[in-house]
Image (cartoon, rainbow, N blue to C red; front, top):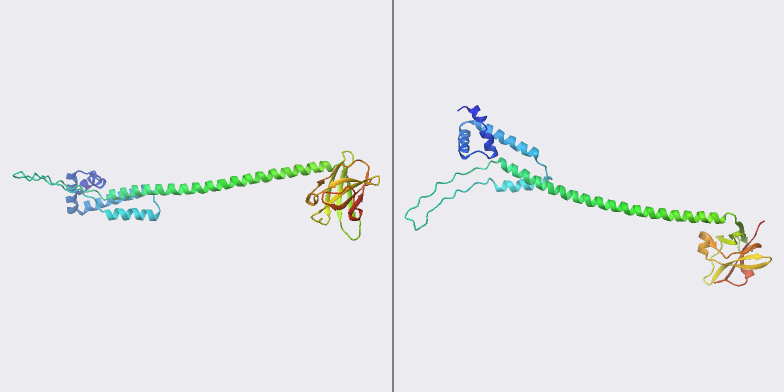
Length: 283
């Protein structure tokens, strides 16, 4: 036999791929037993096929890959079981069918199946990972949206405060500022300020330092016009301390402003002994 010609005939590749006929399989098996060169050529083609399959496959995580090969190695090589045809027991004689040839399945297909299953499992694993990653990014995106909404709300609140401050500054322009100081030595360091616009008669009050009144008491602002006190209203300490308290309008002509401590709700006339601060209108 021309061994090299037989090797290059393509029968070895057909055998490894599982495409050889039964006759070709028997011939090749006989040649492999007789010629070591042919056996080596078959082993080389099988190795090349395995390398190609491994190169084309997508490798799953190690745990998945090990499980797949464990299952395949435990199954072994499938073979076709010969089945004989028998006549019925009533027949006088029977002639058994010739046993069918055992068709060998090339070991390379085990690796092809392993690669296909491994690729499928790798695809499933990647899809699971993608799903988990997608959910994670959805959570992060939702958190960003929440943070964005909070920033917008904070910005709107800041804009509102700025507009209020600007309106307050506009109102204060043209107003007379009247500081009111302590009127008795027993209450040192007290201070409150009146902003009064004689044209619009608008009055605003801010408190710098006044002692907190009792629960049944309240501070009351007075304007002194031609020596007579005119009620400018009571006020809440929180509003006056943190910003400005809007008071009753005051007619032009006030020469002074004063604050007294009265019963809650105010008094028609000031309690002069409970006067805490007072200030004169300049110019």
